[in-house]
Length: 142
Image 1: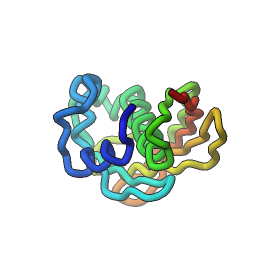
Image 2: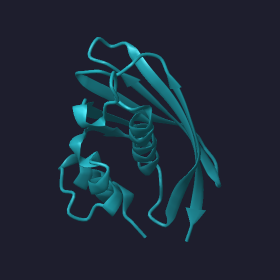
Image 3: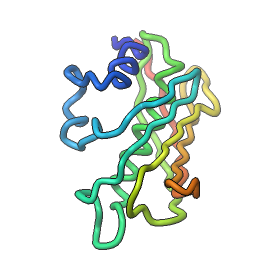
């Protein structure tokens, strides 16, 4: 089973040699994990024009970043013999993302033996709310 704290440390250090294939395929290594606490993380992502539709960043890519943000927050509270999968992800978009840096904050709101409820909040350079996501993560034991 993975060591979640080691994984988060490698991500913070941008050491992605052992990252799963989807990280490279979706260019998820482009962000920076700037804060890691108990049930809380901050992830910063510079807007990449490659992920824009004609006017803003594609919502599906923002959903990918939200899922990743929620996952990172959950990793801070998992034991090494636990694993997880996202069973529900709800997105609420408030304004388009067109430039700058997104501040993606993830927070575990509740955790039981079988699931966790996690929230991601994204703000733009002006501190304005861009999106909120809520994820239900199913916890899996070895």
